[in-house]
Length: 306
Image (cartoon, rainbow, N blue to C red; front, side):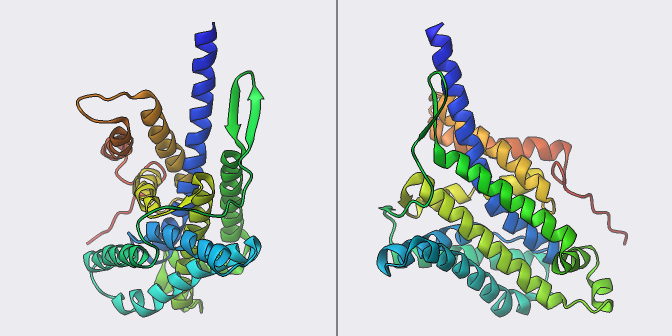
């Protein structure tokens, strides 16, 4: 009975940790989806928004001595400015170019931002500010989970609800949906497509920064290892569907749980460590689901007539 209780406690703890990681991935992937819905650009630099936003919060709090509320605003504002700068200075000049060209530009941006972060902040992780409680929460029996995991899930839920209300109730949200459906028709109705594009990139930068702050607060370390976590954003958005906000939630849950379960329950097999399995399995699940649902679980099938 004691063995069963221990296993049950471990399973619950690992599951909640996976849901928390999935929530952070969903927040970051939300920016990816917003850009794709508005501009049909696949932004491979979304994970770098997470890294830059987190480091800017670190700088604002530890280096500049700002109180944590202002430090958070600096990090989110940095993500917004970075998104606007990329859209205005680079992506706007790519309008009319092939999809492959735009994808290569975003891949180059990801490499450039990663290199810039390495040059400015270095590769080693450093302890930084924690903005959410991290003490244990005792659920029942031997089951205990850090409070910051529940905070991550709560923040993600609040953000996703806010984005849903933004799309349905606000004038700018409706305009963004109109541009996503038909840019030409939206322009005829007097909607500024360039403004909507800029708004999408700004929101994506903010979402990435919030995800980075949550990740660093949970891990207790600010470092380039956050980029390794950000790589899971791509299976999340493709699993859920490139244009689906709901898909980011489902994709985040699937990937977050796969990562945690593989780290905790898969022992070394075939010379592959549990950490390596945690990278392999999300992408294996991605391939398996795309064989059945080529547009992702909630993506819209697009049929073009020539």
